[in-house]
Image 1 (cartoon, rainbow, N blue to C red):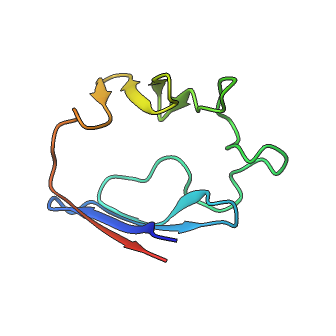
Image 2: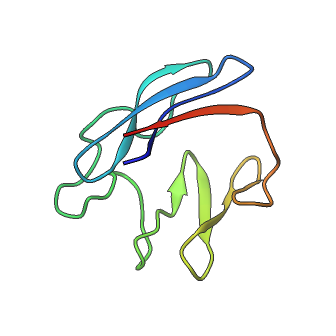
Image 3: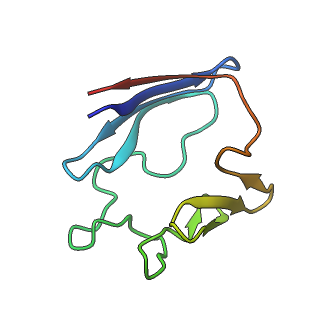
Amino acid sequence: MNRLQHGEDLGGWSRDFNYDQYGNMWVTNATGIAAAGATAQGNYETGSNRMYGFGYDLAGNQLTANGDALSYDAENRQVTATGSASRRAGPAAPQCMYTMRWGS
C-alpha cells in the first residue's frame, strides 16, 4: 500500500507508524520530542471514522491539531497550521533533513 512506516531526523527525533483497516495512522513508537495526536489504536469514532475530540468542517477536514488551527485550499489540501508558531505545509514549506521509510 506504500504507507509511511518510519520517520526520523538528524536531531534524534523518530516515529514508527501503524494503520487500521480504514487507513488511519497512529504512532507505535516515538523517541525525541514527545508524541502528540493519535498514539494508540482506537482513537477513532466507529460510525464516522473520525478522531475523537476534534472538529471537522463539512468536507471532513480536521479543524485543529495539537493546538493549531488548520486551513485548507479549494481542493481540501491543508495549507496552514496556525498556533503559537505559524507553519506552512506543502511545496513552499521550509526544507528539513528527514529520513522516511515507506512500505506495504
